[in-house]
Length: 244
Length: 335
Image 1 (cartoon, chains in turn red, orange):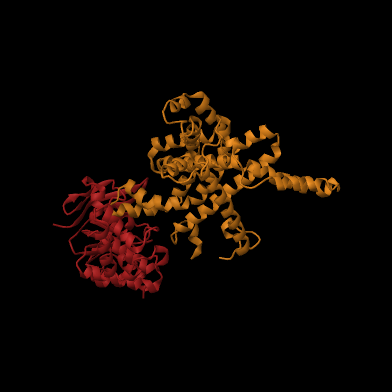
Image 2 (tube, rainbow over the protein chains, first blue to last red; image 1 turned 30 degrees about the vertical axis):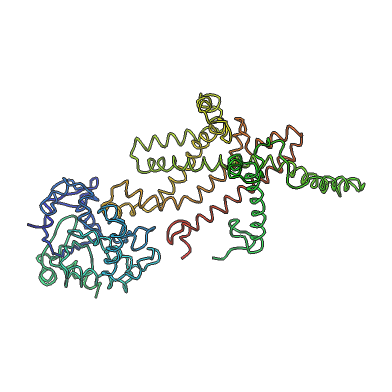
């Protein structure tokens, strides 16, 4: 059974339809990269998974369970999210960012949470910054803390919403490195990103979304080398040139 | 950050020597004030008595009969001496007035110290109780949905839109509140103040909670919305997210506004005198009617208020620094 399944999902903001009849599924361990021009509905698609945005039509299933029927906090405990602007809790240290969910949502003791947080900060390579506040961290460090925060909750799936778009170019690598490691460890990931190198080498599937519709979806090599649609070739070609 | 020497942004930012002078004056003032409070404190007196300590404290002396610790006479006779020099009034008038004022200040100081005691606990109690009311009010206003938000707004506007004095009169004379409080056995006996003080605390709490909630509301609104989104994405409920993420940041943003309200309340607490509370202004009023030296006593009491206000400002700067977090609140520009 697939871990995540979108079934004819539609979503509108007022008159504007941002997702139109989107269906796809994802198995455990899959890394799905979604690309598309701005305004194509990528972020909305991610936010529908953990119900930061509610869909209008269709259904989303997590491990066979309709997410709409689940308690939203229970759902979010199982679906991590990493944001473009990091969204670290500004008043908590790197460690405190990780522990909040552990103590308040998973009910761990302060000590267990701290130990677990240290462990995950170590895993993303920012253990030495555990005491630092977000304002004292570089963008790359912030995003790695953001990943540790999501990861420490031991989610079934992590959503990445343009995790490297707000970073200085020289900091992109460290974040992609962590994501690559996660993929190698078998973490299921749904990522909106324009890092084509990452998509090519790590993604099990690439989805090209435009105007709220899936234009084309498949293994990244096929979409890069011989896409069915000219529009896909045009868009991916543009991205690849940009990132060359 | 460089501070323009001629325009310190706050008392705490005064350059070295002037800062020391302010602090030294403050230390002397507070040492005297605290000693005065202890000297006439009934509870402390009883504790000392029970411990078998020598009877040093004078809690039984009525406020009017309390003796100053410095003799006023030298200043009074100095004033007389200067006056009798026969120099033109223009040249020495101010010095005579000043020396007389100092003598008068020394005589009135014990009663004013007692008044300051009431002012301080009235203000501190009302600020803290007001905060307890203001936090839920402001959260209701920002996150409470239509009904709660309107309720909070209505309360805030009603309280802020009517005179504090009218509120106090309504509570004290209009409602049976004072009688109800008075019927409690302890009230007004021994070191427990009378009903009017409790009514004043209730009034100031209600009033300042409305103002505080406005400051806190705007502080909550200045917390980045994505902070709550992030909390929710980890699985925290909306209320848990507000409690653990929005409030810790928002309350830090609110400190300058809250300090402002604190300083206002110290001065507005003078209105308690109108419902028979002998706080600082009330004491000054009594002295004024006893001595007819109206101008002089109000100048002296102004110095007391100034000292309380400056102390509050300094203390709140300390608090603000103590709880500061890089990237949160007023210290944002520092890095």
